Image (cartoon, rainbow, N blue to C red; front, side):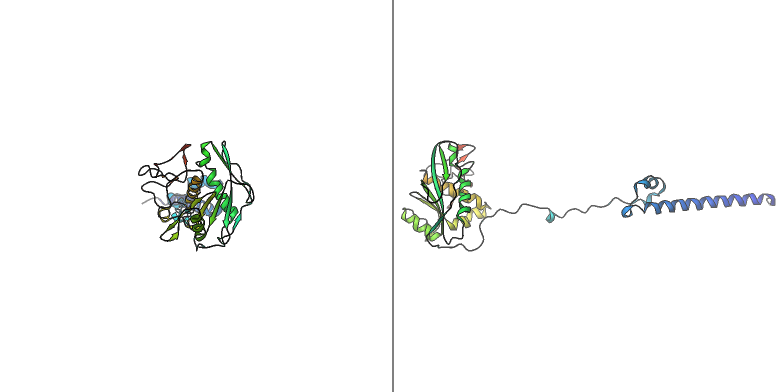
Length: 282
């Protein structure tokens, strides 16, 4: 049995050990409290060392999770316009309004040919807008002026000109083309566009709706418009119809792409890579 004189010393040692344990618990609690005081419940910079040293691993916060961005939230470019929605006027007044603008000279050298731009009243189209699209088609790169032997320029409606580019409703286009010796009917209805002497006549139906095989292949309406302008202006410049040079190859611009492709791919330009592109004569 231990001596009574030694019991007080042992009691003091036990009390000292208990005091140390209490101090450790309080220190850990204080560290956790301080860490939670940073902005947003995260540790402030001055307490990062305390977090690393004094916080037990189970109390460390997990890194924030980043939710994946839903696929439908990723911005994407709008799909191309394949045709203009809504009804297309089948007949207009038969009278035309002219774009009053003088355009730039297109092409670097060669004979200068002047053209004016006209839109039938009642077609719900703007002569200025039509003129800009015609100019873009004839400017290229890839248009007829790439030959280096031709220049083109739009002039106002009352100015001297070599030819006029008309945008006409189907009925008026059919009448104008027939007067020039061209039948544009398919299934009894004026369908295609044409060239008559001094007149490039674009059918409003095709300008607004393109053609079914272009639409089903998701060819933009802008591509069809470029094609039809270059095709009909090509006739004005003396070029005749051509055939597909081979399956899978680009269609010549003088091929009747409005009616068929015959295994060729859509092509709105007479020049490709700076060289005249053509097919066998029809």
